[in-house]
Length: 126
Image 1 (cartoon, rainbow, N blue to C red):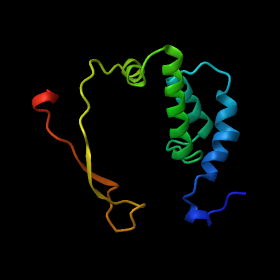
Image 2: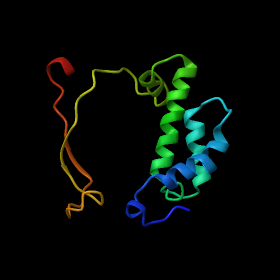
Image 3: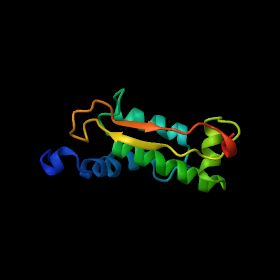
């Protein structure tokens, strides 16, 4: 039985239980298809914000599906995501820097989850 007392309700046992008992039975043995399977996971969850299964379970499942589909398709993960989401040409990734943490996990009264900066596209990035 998963309790709210463990890690103040922020542990991963419930996410693992949801993965093993609710998500995996619907996906195991099928050819990985990211978009269709993500929709199926949303249907299993049954809420608009994925609050039934939770982000730890749904995100983990989605990442595994994406990686499995890339392997099955014989392409790199970034190539698959480019195809699935029709991103177009790819470029050198830009580093994002987290300069301040906040939100519910930080326990510091800052309302925003993260404050991040992104360098301008100049020089080798353009």
